[in-house]
Image (cartoon, rainbow, N blue to C red):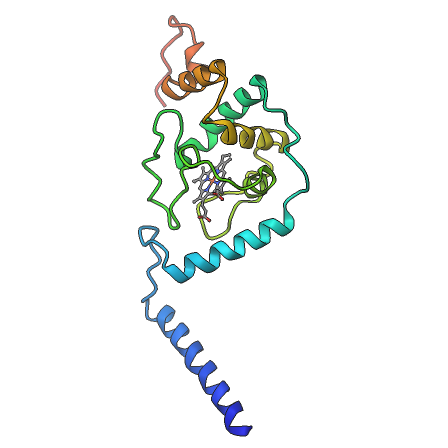
Length: 188
Ligand code: HEC
C-alpha cells in the first residue's frame, strides 16, 4: 500500500514538473498562429458542449423568423460578426484561420445546435478563444434575431437576401445617405 501511494505521488510530481517546465522554459507555443492540438480540441469542445447544454435557456427562439426580424439580424451580423465568421461579401473570412482555435464559418456551415445553445454562446462568449461575450453590447432580443438570421441564412426571403447583399457590398449605410455635397471631413 505504501509503495502504491508513493508511486502515485511520484507520478503526480513528474506530471506537474513536466507541465511547469514546459511553461517555464517557454516551450508552450502561445501564438494564435499555432492550431490547437488534438487533445486540447477534444477536451475544450467537450467542456464547451457540456457547459452550454447545462446553462442554455429552455425553449425555442422567442423571435419569429419573419422578414423584419431576419433583416435586423442580418444587419447586426454584418456589423459585428462577419469580420470573423464570414459574411455576405467574404463568405470565408480572411480571419478564419488567424485565430486559435480557428473561427467556424457559420454562414457556410450552419451549426446544427439549437438556437438557445448558439444564443448562450453569443451572449457569454467562449474564454480562451477569440469569441467575445456580446452581453451589454447587443440586447438579448438582437442576439435572438442574429441567431435566427444565421439559422435561415441559406433560405432567406428574397427581400432579406437582397438587403443583406447590399449591406455587405456597399459602404456603411450611414455613408450611403450622406449627401454628396457635404463638406469634406476636416483633417485630424
Ligand atoms: C473576433 C472574432 C469573432 C467575432 C467578432 C465573433 N465571433 Fe463568434 N466565434 C469566434 C471564435 C474564434 C469561435 C470559435 C470558438 C471555438 O472554437 O470554440 C466563435 C464561435 C461562435 C459560435 C459557436 C459556433 C458553433 O458551431 O458552436 C457562435 C454561435 C458564434 N461564434 C456567434 C457569433 C455572433 C452571433 C457574433 C456577432 C454578434 C460573433 N460570433 C462574433 C470568433 C468571433
